[in-house]
Length: 333
Image (tube, rainbow, N blue to C red):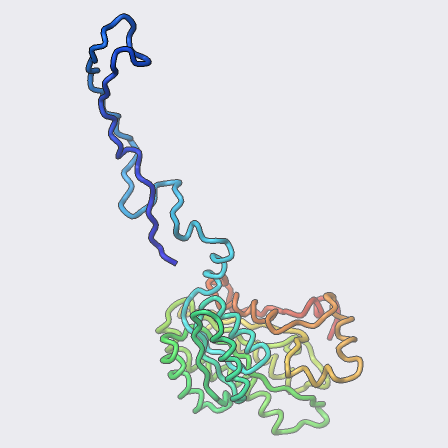
């Protein structure tokens, strides 16, 4: 939107010329001939004592056609889209990662998208590019591979021009009682959910410095990071670990003006939870225990993430936001 606006002409620019009043005309003195008489010249109006208004700046109280005339919705969108630096999103092929990408391009932020699911990633990129003037680039990256991460971060920064945001939405889950801990699933869960968050944050220090203060990260934890679940031993360990990593990185990044927070979603209708929803009565019981009596949609998690990344949350760091429809406020999970 243009920031220039043409103001109306200043009434002080209009001169008050001396006038002649013909005899016989309305307002002329009675009993005089019709010879016109020139009136004495009127005194020029006294200059206003108000200070001059610098060129290009609207007068006090005047409305210009710029920011002041923007709709409240447009202004809110501008604020949620600041800073305008690019955002790296892992796990972007579906679920919360995809919804976050769409929420960010909606307010004009460029996005670099990572996932191992190439087909899902391409679909997310297509959806993003349907938005006017959106910028979205994707790469197939294994976030558990530190060497791959170290190589892919500079590429993401170069593709977007700057990289001042990070959302770690990649995640691994699976049922696991402590009686039957599987080494491979345990390692995969902690490597993707926790270790990758720290390794990517490490690689982002320099790009965040280039992007400047206002850079921010949001890590996806879970209500299982706040409470235990016998069937999700590895997942609970990883999501609790995400909160510890988040607080530690937040303290370090604050030294440079960067912010780090986490969100703890409850039940969300994503591909990760789809197998559990197929269990007889599982979804119904979960919704009955939730005060809002439903599960969340991915965009209901993405919008708070967008807020935490924006300058609207400029004094928020080192905290987690629980987004669970009130479930953990009233009962243990």
